[in-house]
Image 1: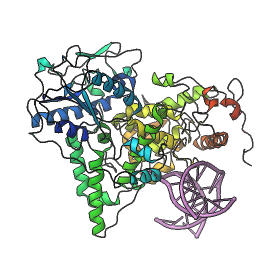
Image 2: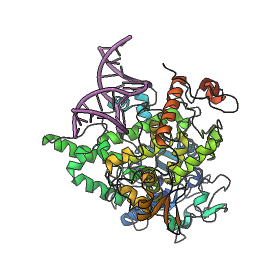
Image 3: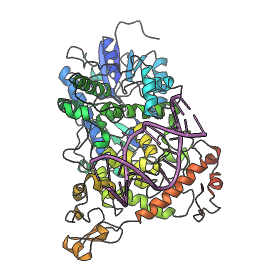
Image 4: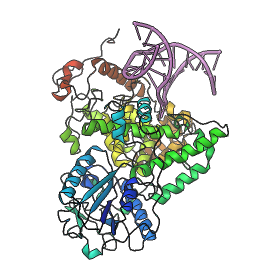
Length: 602
DNA sequence: GGCTGGTTGTAATC
DNA sequence: GATTACAACCAGCC
């Protein structure tokens, strides 16, 4: 397999770890004592155009790469983050690469990709080293210790974790120092030919809406110095003026943020997610470290241990600490829970169709086959009653013009900044699915995938299942009100005033229900509540009327959920695959749902 | 088979 | 601000 030469040319492939601190894979690579070391990033078609990535997340990614590249440069002026192929058929000729090292990625698409990369590399006699570093615990280990089953609750994760080592994650590793980073190959010896562009198939580019030159078959990505460095936004077809997020990427940003929080021992020790406000901004009520976990600009093990050390210090001083699962370590355990659930189920984890853990609900706009999902299509309608209406509701939800200011403010914050508080996500996700529109969670998950800078497939999909009560959570009668829930946190309506500025002057009495404000007041406050759009008019601004009666919709949704739970189908049931489920739901040919009958369980 | 707990509901009542 | 009814889900435990 390995060449006998003592020369070690090590290719280090950064993917889920855009950092130098606590990367077990990077530490392994450097401990080989390479003669030559080439840290690389490669353009994965999945990221470039097969999965949804909006401008804000692109921006966060490139900032993170620039930061990493600069960190390498500061340790060794000849180094940077190189854009290069992760493997090559020409390994033997290609400067004689001997090792390929990367962090383990258990996302389902990534497993298939990595299997192929490993096969090609090993065929070429290159030794491949893969190390877990993305989670507290290796998701595959958690699954094994959970009897091979997907982890469906925090107690299962805790029990499984107790069977791994001492039940706690491993301590973080130090970042390499300036003597630890060897030189790269001279540029002329690197196999960099033929990658001035990255091909993009416009036919399947789900991000074409964001791209300048959307019909182009490729994007230019040579970097501003034409030297195979980190490309600019422009090169990947993103207009810099589309970037609105105030949140910045990069390992140094992440470590500064974490260090700041760690100084505040009270905040760390007493943190309980359900007691943090979804309506707070400047400053936010939570840490905003989630995008850094996604890009690996912060090690989750460092996060966990820094917090743990504070909590142990507080405990010794007889100061109180919050407990799992609402405290910070508990929040990080949820991340591992979703990762391990995905690791157990594989590619079907991301959808209903074929997924054993997901309840089948007769949602509107249900996506019906894996092929459709892979190409980002809606998949048509499973039954056509109200489907056009549902599509309209979906679009109004996505664009933040439902007529419910709390929902619209959150959706506009999401679109602008790429981040909203976890409870805000609860609110809008419940509203789209079981608590309002009765639209499939898969459609909502697609929107979050595109817009969130912290989008993590496992957590996003898992949380949508949770909120839609299709897996992990089942108390569907606990329904978020688009009026009461926001009011509880933000009685003055400050979040609404910021993100729906047309309502900024409304009295707090009406800010959550502007349609109830008398016309004279609407005129006085400079915004008419009418129609279904948000737009300027000659005599002032317009905010839409609510797109439906929420109380009525809540009742309809609750009945639907009761029925679906009673029917009890899951994504892998035969009736779902062959679409004969309609019969079980009493839906007649032609798609008409039956008139509401007596409650089924009376 | 019954009881309890489950990260984060709402509205009415005291 | 705490308590309770609402209508009633699942999993885990005894």
